[in-house]
Amino acid sequence: MIIRKLAALTAAAAMVFAACSSTGGTPAASTAAAKGCTVGVSWNNYDQERWKKADEPAIKKAVEAVSGGKYIKTDARDNAEQQITDITTLINQGAKALIVLAKDGVGIKPAIKAAEDAGIPVIAYDRLIEDPKVFYITFDNKKVGTIMAQVITKLVPTGNYAIIKGDPGDANAKFLRDGMDEGGLKALVDSGKVKIVFEQNTPNWDTTGATNEMQAALNGTTPVNNIQAVLSENDGMATGVVAALDAVGLKIPVSGQDGDAAALNRVALGTQSVSVWKNAFALGETAGAVAEQLCGGTKPADIKAPADLPAAAAPAAAGAQDFTTPGGNTVKSITLTPTPITKDNLKDVIDAGWVTKDVVCSKVPAGTVAACG
Ligand code: GAL
Image (cartoon, rainbow, N blue to C red; front, side):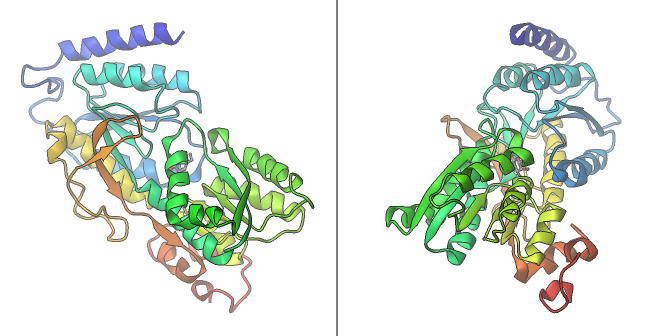
């Protein structure tokens, strides 16, 4: 099945290649008047709140800000095989640059290579794709894990921990976990102060999956429910974790990431300690702008992040940097900066227009959280 899909992809890519001008593979289809390209975005899914709310509108806006720029998209609904087909579809529909939120950063490789061989630049969006030619645009994912560990271990320096990790096919799950160790978790485990009593990956970063895992974690200790902290790798899973904790009457420190509305409300209510916020408006804007630059012929090494990104999210360096992947590829990359959101700085997400005060402060008792009044 996959082979048939790849054959179709190669044929589609060859057609695009044939349509390219002789000037280094720049697609001839983009007329002289219109500088912009059609950018095809292959979404893995829209399951987490961020993709529709922030990433997608920001990419679309940045693509359409370039005269002639056009945004097209597909949704693989969490199906890795479907995502391979989707890439062919986008190419057939005229995409001259691709932005891919990969379901499986290794399984998607042949489709990515076929597109690149046809002169179509590919951006690995948010999640790594193990391919030497992709342009990788993401947040500092290790740092996300480091922040989670720092916040949670400060609150719980000794005790039993559960670690609810993300999808095993998403490189971010492992980057986060490595970041946790770097953020002090390993030292505490090595010294015997912290014991990891449960650690598991969660297919599709699924909320219900996380509830089930948390229940298993709580049932697995002697006595039961003997867990003092949870490192959950994102907010959607934290929703599931907190549901399981609630069910047994436990209120303990829990981490997350993404700045989901429900999670920020939990931070205000005190049922989640931190949501590491990745300003996905900034990430989407960067990807849309870079897709247009690449498609217009700018070399990966000369790519720059937009100059107007919010200071807190901006990359340490505006220009493309080398990033060495776990698979040993060195790719050009722009890495944005994540922000920890705790009870103390909820104002930042409200002021940034990320979420309204009403949502963050829903049911929060007066006088308990500064941002809520
Ligand atoms: C990860 C991403 C997280 C979260 C998760 C859910 O790749 O880094 O921010 O959105 O996917 O799909």
